[in-house]
Length: 338
Image (cartoon, rainbow, N blue to C red; front, side):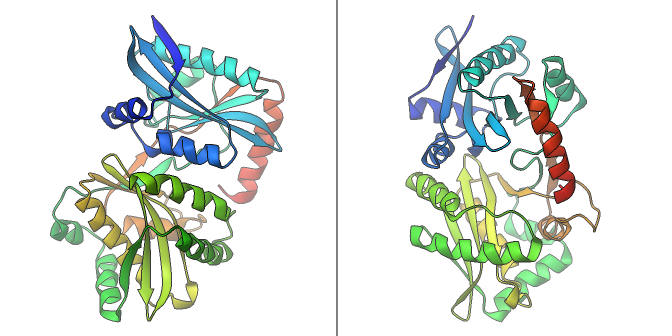
């Protein structure tokens, strides 16, 4: 019989994730710590079968103007072939959600977008969300190959721009200095002005860096040209995967292809840390040049790799007010062209 209990042992939690094929930083202990530091209440649930840990789920309580809800990003990490686990998860989260006055639960598991998986969630009463929950359509690269092969499999233009950046005198520096997060934030503001998206607050970057750096799971990469930082990116190293999470760049120096060299050096660092996959994170769901993220998608795909579509976020309504949120988010999604 499956029993769900709160987990307070970091080592137990992390060891389970690292051994689990669905393991990802969004369910990590440190992601929970980061969310807690940002003022969100968190719940760490463990699924036990005869005292053996068989699954986990990090839940984050989000208090928004449109309504309070629980989210489970990149999880739960359970055996999806065991229907009892999923039903136990739903039952427990419903109890927590109602106790915390939530009007719905939003889940984006680390399983693929397939007809069977969509049917599974629909069968259990979930509704396809109007919004995404972190990156769902991702671009990933197998970095177990030799560097020469990785370079040869890139788009010709990408390979050329990496070489050009080196020739132009761009250098890449890695930093674990919390004070330099301000640099990333400033560059992100310039990127926001260029692409017109909603930025993350500086505190978000700061807490993420402060928490993950304790376990050496994050680095700030900077592209330097003539003593000026042209681009910066936060790379998370978790398990056997490196994730290109946040970045910013200075359009005033767009003729200098600094971001290309920055990515290449991040990939090389990921190889040194024995990562198997370099995850470029989100891309546009279509190849339409009119999509707002078409430019960054083209940039990421130029390094070679493959597309991975995780199951789109699923909502479990707990209250009739959920439908007000559902249609509000639908309108916002259309307006933002998401």
